[in-house]
Image 1 (cartoon, rainbow, N blue to C red):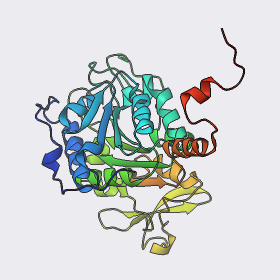
Image 2: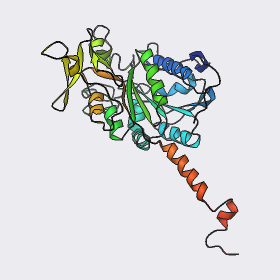
Image 3: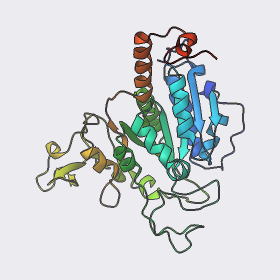
Image 4: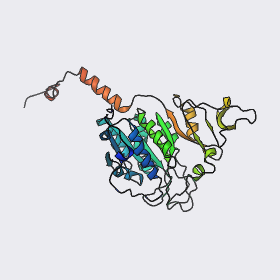
Length: 339
């Protein structure tokens, strides 16, 4: 367990002395700001944080953190982060990755760290493009999008990140926006407080290669009608007039307007992030416009022993029951002979 912080930190304490070299206007700046703020509010000592990244624009993150960090290799941040947490369980480990790094070359590591439920925080920046390598389509690029590597439009179906997480039996999935630092900060705090693999998808804007890719959701004029902020135990209500809600109709979700067609607030679903079965969580994570708003906040959070906890318990059990007290005992056991 991470020791409780011995001093009160500010966001500034987590900023390194390195020049931040992301493009002006890049959504990464806001996410970095939110992580600084979140870490300052959490009860860990600054030396108990480790930030691990792979390759990509997002993966420059460790340079901008005044914490321990490791800029690793393409797609392998999950493997390194899992090892760091298992070897030193007291650390608060943050894996920073993108839709290319984490879901393409790193896809295998991604699903297995989720399956194992390693106690770490995966912050996945989703701008639906390869930014660092100059605009190739990624595993989350929408079908039909024209990019440097799909000049006539990509013909591949994209991954749905929430669906991928829940398919790997993930215990925590949340979503936030680079344009809402306050919400992102609280979501990162929620992720760190969860014991297990916490995956936070952040819709992030690349001003160079996929500018306004999330514009339908972030448009200032319409965002209240297109964003649903979920909170456990609260009604799924949204809209400019706060009169729209998510209801269930014959096993499917639908948007209703309170006060129309006889609908009342009682018809609106109450969010249960802790439900064991991911059925509704999956439907919420997969909602897209124009028929539905996009869901933000903690969509799924369930309790299950983490991988590192299971390893520690197994080691303790073996140590308690072993007949060996030293390496000499091990070497002298079993079939032995003198040369």
